[in-house]
Amino acid sequence: MAAAVLLVLVLAAAVLLIAAVTRSIIPRHPAMANAEQAARPASLAIRTSTRKAVQQAVAAALGRDRDEGLVQVALRDAIRVASNPRVNKRLETPSEAPGRPVLSQPGFSQEPQHIELLRNKTGEAISQVLQPSQAVLSPQRKPQRRPPWAPAAMHGDVPPDTATFGKSGAESEARPRAIGASWQLALSVLGYTPAMQQLQRQAEGLKLFVYSPPASAAWSAVNLTARFPKCRTFQWSGDFEIIEQIRNSPHYTSEGDSADFFLVPFLSKCFFNFVAGYNTQAMEFALVQVLGFLSGQRWWQTQQHRHLFFFMSGVGASIIPSWKAQLGHSIFIVAEGDREVPYFRYRHDIVVPGKVSVRARNPSRVMKGNRRLLAMFRGSLVALLRDMRGKRVHKPNRLRKRLANQLKRVPGVVFSGHKSRDYVTEMDNSTFCIIPRGNTPWTRRFFDAALRGCIPTVLSNPISFPFERLFDYSQFTIKLPEEWATRLVRELHTVNESATRNLRTALLRATPAFMYRAGCAFELLLFELAARKHAFFDSWHEATRNSPIEFWNPAQGHFALPHTAKVGPSWGAAAVPH
Image (tube, rainbow, N blue to C red; front, side, top):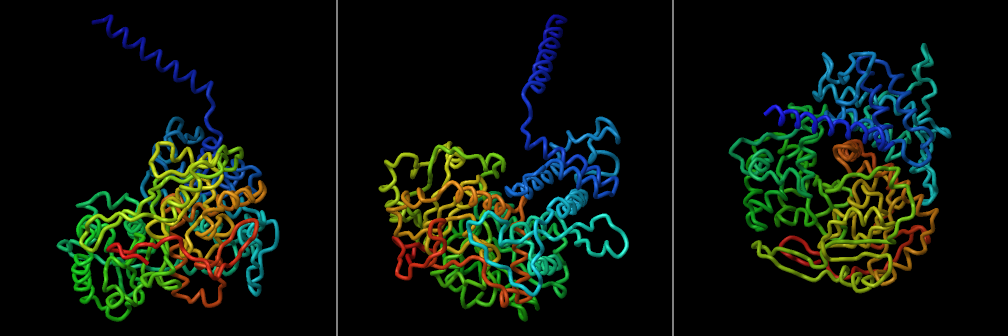
């Protein structure tokens, strides 16, 4: 017995010794080290209530990478590290309590209010790190449209001047108002123009009311997610994510009379898949129940135009045939905009990102060159549909079939209709990710590609991108006509190294717009709502010049083809082609 105990102790000591030696020999990734370096004083700043510690830590961690679009991304990583309970256990401060993480010391925890305080403290430092290289545009001057491939900041704008930080007296009044890190990420995507900063202040003041249906309501988000947990995580679960973020944000109000917008917690795609069984008539019965509840709410009777409904799949509101008669005045939050169908109303509805299944890639790896593949795609080559009764229907996807036939023997290109464990690796090794239209213009592969730093090359004529009226997609994507499928490789070879680097740099800046938790997708939704409340788009030019006949690439810039056409149909609910 004693010998067995001794053997166990010897083995344990050997394991600990090997771990210690390995840790000393194999250095940790510099990106994580930088993030923790920025996060440690950021945590300490909560106790000391100083901004200087945060400022110095972030500036030291980021160094001189400002021109590569890495500032915002690295700072976002620092915030994520600081607010992660597992990682935070390593954030020790000798001057405080040796061996104890700052957020684990008395008075500090992983409670949401403490994490939010940390995020705000770190956010205040962003304006100190992002020093301007030129003057801010004057309020009287419209933002100048910069050529898409210019290596400057998005929209040619720069963050506000923060040189007066730390000064006292009248000078301190010039210091920009401190805002949270997520708002700073949103402004880094949209550009620090006076108009956007004003819109941010209006968005920050919004109040949103979320209806609370009775426990007996089978259509409510609470009941649906309890019965079908997948509705919290599958690729159409952006509706659940948004509801949760609203409820846990300062924008939530339980007083409908003070609300700017009213959100109906009906997870329509979840209900369509798991309750209605893809039957559109069952969705009509569900809508009767929803409207029966709303009819007793006075805000629905007087402000239908400020009510928000979710339709998060590609077929949108077509899953309810009577949507126009019953919900025509309300705003739809959708995961796709198809400009050729009546159930997506451009300038009325709001397109938000879908739920992604991959993690964002380290920005330092994104910017590295020498990718062995020119382009890749993995996805279905067949349209997998359901008819009005929920029966499976298979139709050929003509566009993807044409691409597969064209690209199957091209060196340096992967185009496959089969799944692979190497999906993420192939994206990481590809310069371009081909994003062809699927059953509908929407595909989550766009967001997968963006998060992995693979330049999205879109062949989907009628697509409308998330938040495209607020920032310019031509700076970090390529959109080509579907009819150019046969010349795709030739077009990609015309993109030189400089243009590729500019596209990739701009893609890094835009990536937070496609993430809810670690990015600013929720804040950009608030920007869109504020724009509708304050008629912002009446005086603001649309950032992305996009339509079914408009396209862009580095060689030709923006161009229009009035007589171009789709390659094969798209499909709505009940397998109806269009």
